[in-house]
Length: 102
Image (cartoon, rainbow, N blue to C red; front, side, top):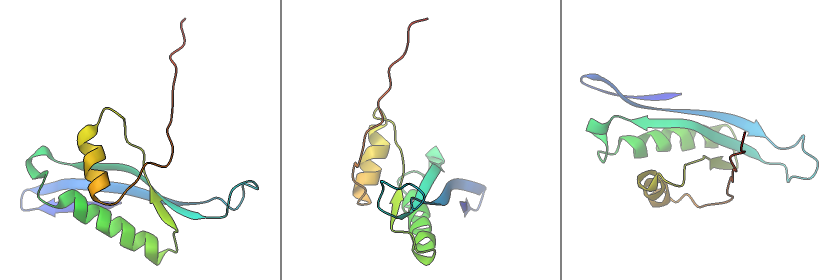
């Protein structure tokens, strides 16, 4: 976890963990840094906080021999998608769901 702090306290944070695909026989062995959550206070958006948090995650991932950084983002969150695309993230897959009738 990395935390962004300003004069009035915490203004953002990001969680990340490392996973390894070597145990799955049909996948190419890769060390993956997975971002779980990234949050920036509304008062500090567009001030570089998110970009700085991602930079720290990428540096940590590189130091720990990760091959890539992955994250999930909801399709409706166009602001976040635009932010991630500006940081050179690309869509790799899509998670699809279907609500079942009860």
